[in-house]
Length: 361
Ligand code: ATP
Ligand code: MG
Image (cartoon, rainbow, N blue to C red; front, top):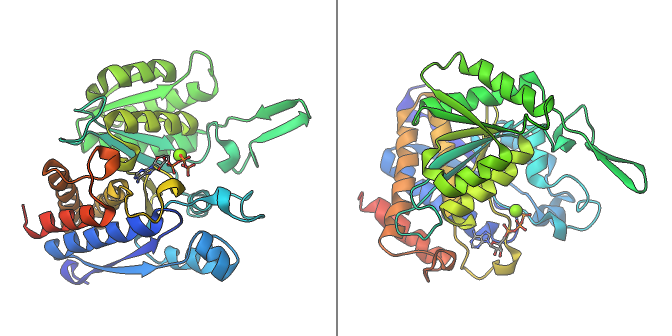
């Protein structure tokens, strides 16, 4: 099969809350960008979330998992699992279920300021690579079960797990990324206190660094890192850290470089990837056509970027760049949703991005 006749097949899981608004917006924009780049994409809509509980009796139906296994990747809308009826409410939420099922070990979250959008730091351009299967959220780890237990009703204990294997594979993702960017990598840990666990994390990352002599490496304690991010986020390129530190740090980085509504992410294994906005389902604004679709749109661009390396098809990088440029153009030209200080609706913003893409600006 030749490159130009390849059709990429991507899943569409709308999810809950603002999901049915921001996911179709993102798919529309990616479709326009793919058309402009001459890339053929088949979109496969699959059930997920509250609506799937009604139709299939579970938020993540088996048929969804089976179908996703045969696709090149997928767009995951946010979910509002606290609103689900039991037993689904207490069970692992849909994104956790998919991360676990497909062993999506790397959570990649950029924080990049937009010209024209207000932010604490207006020239940040960094990426956090968060280990997604163990660390201090050991609920995701097979050794630890739930990762938490109570030996008495008044004592709760949490396990933290760091393994060489999981650290090394996420470190390689981070170093590869740094190599494709500004060739700087920062290891974030707390090896002065959590000596064995985060100490091993730092050691393994430093060992992997031997294979990347062209990448400049430094490291900070998680607490010091928060200070450096607020003061000088623009100095950082790629950050690699364990699960819980990465969760907290990426919210901080996302917020100082823009708004939650602009923060994209992907969750990746070696073979597949899931685009997922960093924010939740925003039930407080759902159904009003005012949600900011940018985080979801840019998560989609990240998926196309990730597919570029996997398939060696540079046209996919063009799709990613076209999406990013369309969003930046629309915002710079003064169209944005309320969370960014504008007044555009979700659909108006979507139309502005598609117009920018169509104009080939
Ligand atoms: P979760 O636990 O699912 O991550 P959360 O408690 O972190 O949920 P979010 O759903 O992310 O909450 O919403 C936090 C706040 O940010 C809400 O006020 C919500 O309306 C707002 N928000 C989140 N995403 C967007 C968006 N895309 N556009 C506009 N506002 C948003
Ligand atoms: Mg949240």
